[in-house]
Image (cartoon, rainbow, N blue to C red; front, side):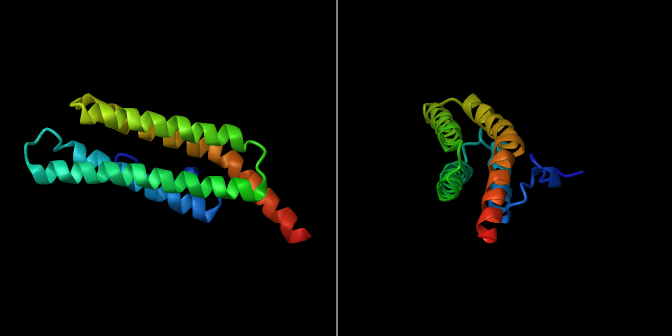
Length: 146
């Protein structure tokens, strides 16, 4: 049994390597953030700094990943781009609210943030991104036949 918060499983694969690689990296970043939680009550400044770095890496990589997905959506003229992008914006806004709450002194915000990250990503990967990637594959197939 793994001691990771989220264990990558084949069921998370969308079948599009670039997206799958990014999803794997996001899960590892969430795991790193979770690992830092064990020490978040410590007064040790190095631990606090490690936690802040893990949090920043999470936010930065999520932004990068969403940007990549949306570029692909634009390229294939994905018919649900507005809806999918709105999920990304809603997610990003929620993350920033958790971060702000943490910066305002709420340690519970971090527990809630990590749980939210896990739930949202796994649902987003398993449902929304699998539909999106199916359309990417179909678009690529059509292009290759032209």
